[in-house]
Image 1 (tube, rainbow, N blue to C red):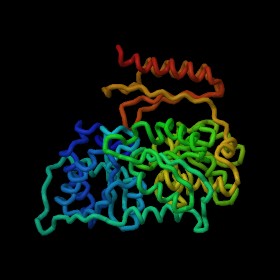
Image 2: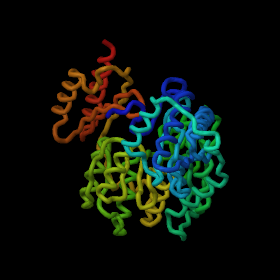
Image 3: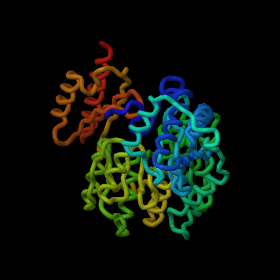
Image 4: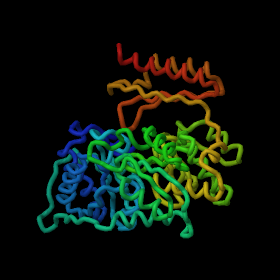
Length: 447
């Protein structure tokens, strides 16, 4: 069955437009509580990022869950991976994150975690969707769910992050700039790195409900680059609004993306005999990552875009590391989901062990020129990716690129965007073909 509400990363959209409305969130809370209570009990943790609409949706979800008889514990502003971790440690049945990740403040969404701290199975998401469309009832008053606030959530998560590196770890002498995107990491991330001894300067840590991801964070590294160079820092670390992505800037001000960070983590694990298999990337992972790992004898496979698909591939193969160029990095030997802070710690520890700077460590992987263009579209009966003219243009580009290139068109799972990606060894040809393809896609909607 096709899902009506759930995308690759939960439910997301513009606040006030269906389904991101208070009415829907009330019903969604009730549907989640009802679905889990069918399995026995339902105790749910709710966390959120810093966007202004989070308070409204937290209240609506809380009311719906209580109406279904679910017990609710509120965590307040916390990174998405923290909710996954706390759901496990509190032995809750589910965790809910109110966040639209790297999107602007006027968007919001809902992500779910199972009691194991992983994404919900498709079967449960379909059951929840069916209940959303069913009439809502309320349990007897004596059975209504109670709500409590967890007071020590931040401290628990900080200690968990620190536990992902050896207890003897000290980053004393390491000068860092952290960019918290005015989002969910603004409190916990600085404490993690400071408590491990680093000299930390923080930007993007003054959320006002409207400035999340605006000019800061993993999707806009300009402010971080400027601050790293101005302060002469060893490197800069940028998280996205909900803390499940990480990107870096080296001491030269150069961007280091998720593919390169994944390479650094994988190499260090291989050298210590701890890699336990290979590495999972996605259809968007740079060809340079695949080639660099191949040279080291490390298997590499591509999953569909989305951390849930990376996770599924890792679990099926029994591997432990994978991720996306966007900075979603999964280290299953430490946690159950993508975690920006924990991934950053693994990179810092790898650099410390090797004695290399970030600029030096990234040289082991030579990225192939890659161009990604996002084309906004209005959803309709025919997907722009399936349009005959678009498919013909893709075939032409593939012929021009030959065996040394890749072409990928896909729909975003979180926004009405067609992602047009072209990759190859000839940078000028890559730029030319990506631009041409994006124009063809845009033209489909201009007619």
